[in-house]
Structure formats: C-alpha cells, structure tokens
Image (tube, rainbow, N blue to C red; front, side, top):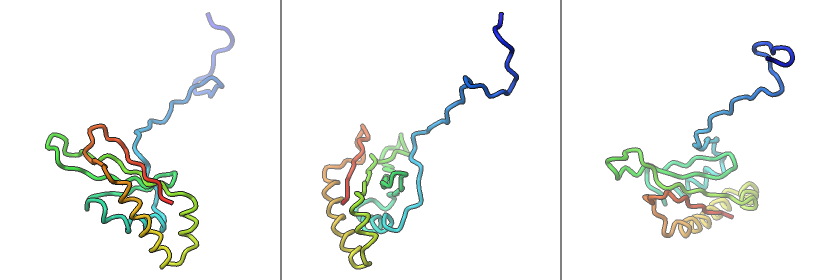
Amino acid sequence: MRFGPRPRRGCNRKFDVQPRRFNTGLPKGQPMDDIRAEFWEALRHLFPDNAVAVALEQGDLLISWKTDDDPFRPNKRSAPIYLRFEATLMTQMRLASPGARELLTAREVETVRAGLWGYEPDDPLLNARFIVLG
C-alpha cells in the first residue's frame, strides 16, 4: 500500500540522498608559491635527499620521505612533519627585498632545526611533528 503518487525514475526529490565523495585521507597537493619554495630550498639540507615537500590547501608544508629500512614494508614513509607559516611571516616575506628574504629564511632554519630535536622518523605510532614558523 502506497501513499501518494509514485515518484518518477531519475526524479530528484527533496529526500533523495546523494552519495558522499570518497575521501582517501591523503593530502591534496597545491602548487607551491614562491615564498614556500624559498623556505623549502633553505630547509632541504635538514632532510634526507628523498624528502618531498607538499603544499597543503591551508598553506602548510607537509614533509615526508620513504624510509626504506624495513624489508617487509618497502613503501614505509616517515612520520610527517608539518610546517605552519604565520601570517606575519608571510607578509614580511612578501614585502622584503631578496637579501632580507634570505635573512628571514636563515632565521627560520634554526627554528626548524630546534623543532626537529628528538624527532624519530621511524616512530611506530607515526606521530606527526608540527613546527610553527613566524
């Protein structure tokens, strides 16, 4: 027993439920702007040669690399490192001359070096490390 007329096939009714898009949980990379690229070039020497930096949608840099030390897990990645840039630092970098930009990035290299103290890339819990620059 039905109440009311039968809905037409393909009709978009107000109670129709649209399926959600599948979210893999992987970060979507954004093109890296000039300022973040300068920071990555200045910080690259602190990480292994196979480290990759990905610009995230909110402006952070995600740094990770393959550890290749476990034969049973050949694609194992390091615990992620997130670099968060404060708005004041980004404004200073936009307004600075090329020489002043080098000084700002050099100062933040020391901040990242201090933030990496005690970091374990092979942490079994994959605890992420967040470092705020600025």
